[in-house]
Amino acid sequence: MEEQDQQNQEKRKKPLNKGLENFTRYSGLAFQMIGIILLATFGGVKLDKLTTWETPVFTIILSLLGVFAAIYISIRDFIKKQ
Image (cartoon, rainbow, N blue to C red):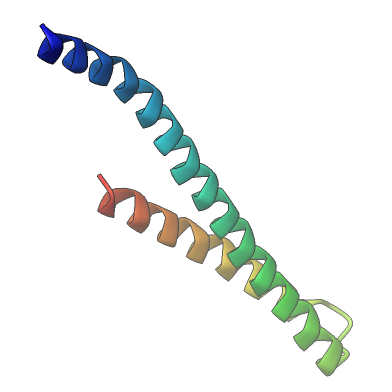
């Protein structure tokens, strides 16, 4: 009887823990993506200040590369953890 009670309690706890686990996983992934994009954009701004060109070439290029890198890393991380 006690075994059944323990099994029922474990079944009730699993969906709640799984939801919390998914929340932390995806929120951490979002912060990682934001960090990569911001770092790449910041690097582009700094390089544009050094070159003093009229158009922000490095900012545009590095921000796009940062977005693609963030998407690549998030997809790789998502597939790996399944």
